[in-house]
Length: 74
Image (cartoon, rainbow, N blue to C red):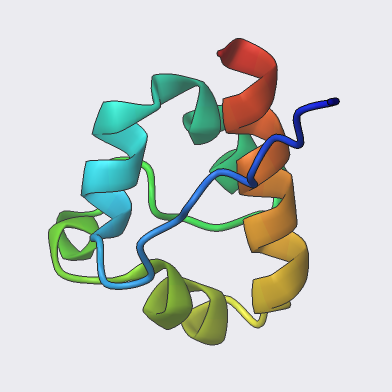
Protein backbone atom coordinates (compact mmCIF):
# COMPACT_ATOMS: atom_id res chain seq x y z
CA UNK A 1 0.00 0.00 0.00
CA UNK A 2 1.53 3.38 -1.00
CA UNK A 3 2.00 5.95 1.69
CA UNK A 4 0.70 9.44 1.29
CA UNK A 5 2.73 12.17 2.89
CA UNK A 6 0.72 14.69 4.80
CA UNK A 7 1.46 18.33 4.05
CA UNK A 8 3.74 20.20 6.39
CA UNK A 9 1.57 21.69 9.11
CA UNK A 10 2.08 25.41 9.47
CA UNK A 11 0.85 26.92 12.71
CA UNK A 12 -0.79 30.19 11.68
CA UNK A 13 -0.49 31.40 15.28
CA UNK A 14 3.29 30.96 15.33
CA UNK A 15 5.24 34.16 15.04
CA UNK A 16 7.14 34.90 11.86
CA UNK A 17 10.29 34.95 13.99
CA UNK A 18 9.55 31.42 15.27
CA UNK A 19 9.09 30.16 11.70
CA UNK A 20 12.38 31.69 10.54
CA UNK A 21 14.23 30.31 13.58
CA UNK A 22 12.81 26.80 13.22
CA UNK A 23 13.34 26.70 9.46
CA UNK A 24 16.09 29.22 8.57
CA UNK A 25 15.83 28.28 4.90
CA UNK A 26 12.48 30.13 4.86
CA UNK A 27 14.23 33.48 5.31
CA UNK A 28 14.94 33.59 1.57
CA UNK A 29 11.24 33.00 0.92
CA UNK A 30 10.20 36.00 3.01
CA UNK A 31 12.66 38.09 1.02
CA UNK A 32 11.48 36.65 -2.31
CA UNK A 33 7.92 37.68 -1.45
CA UNK A 34 9.24 41.16 -0.58
CA UNK A 35 8.18 40.81 3.03
CA UNK A 36 10.33 42.96 5.27
CA UNK A 37 10.12 40.54 8.22
CA UNK A 38 13.79 39.58 8.37
CA UNK A 39 15.33 41.57 11.20
CA UNK A 40 12.08 43.39 11.97
CA UNK A 41 11.35 43.73 15.71
CA UNK A 42 7.64 43.15 14.99
CA UNK A 43 8.43 39.66 13.59
CA UNK A 44 8.34 38.32 17.15
CA UNK A 45 4.68 39.40 17.39
CA UNK A 46 3.34 39.01 13.83
CA UNK A 47 1.90 35.71 12.73
CA UNK A 48 2.14 34.50 9.14
CA UNK A 49 -1.40 35.71 8.60
CA UNK A 50 -0.57 39.16 10.03
CA UNK A 51 2.53 39.47 7.92
CA UNK A 52 0.82 38.44 4.69
CA UNK A 53 -1.95 40.96 5.36
CA UNK A 54 0.52 43.76 6.13
CA UNK A 55 2.59 43.07 2.99
CA UNK A 56 -0.41 42.38 0.68
CA UNK A 57 0.76 38.81 0.03
CA UNK A 58 -1.74 36.06 -0.77
CA UNK A 59 -1.80 33.85 2.34
CA UNK A 60 -2.55 30.60 0.51
CA UNK A 61 0.22 31.18 -2.03
CA UNK A 62 2.74 32.04 0.68
CA UNK A 63 1.83 29.07 2.87
CA UNK A 64 2.13 26.72 -0.09
CA UNK A 65 5.58 28.14 -0.83
CA UNK A 66 6.52 27.77 2.88
CA UNK A 67 5.42 24.13 2.89
CA UNK A 68 7.36 23.44 -0.26
CA UNK A 69 10.51 25.13 1.07
CA UNK A 70 10.33 23.21 4.35
CA UNK A 71 9.62 19.89 2.63
CA UNK A 72 12.51 20.38 0.19
CA UNK A 73 14.93 20.76 3.08
CA UNK A 74 13.65 17.74 5.03
